[in-house]
Length: 77
Image (cartoon, rainbow, N blue to C red; front, side):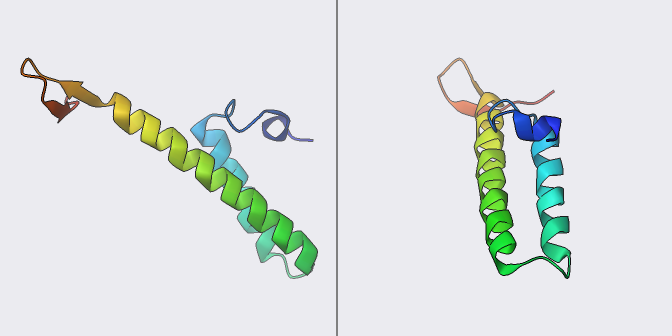
């Protein structure tokens, strides 16, 4: 079992999640993949996508900054 598969989705980095998505896509593109395996891969891909979206939402929220008047602005370097 790959290292990324041993970790929970919450423990994986975005890079590991994206690599998992690539593996799912590669698996689904194989000609010899069964219908049952396709469903498993699809389910796994949806779990990975949800985790990626959740992680990106958290990052986006951290990138917002309050000014002196309490207004929210995007973080700028």
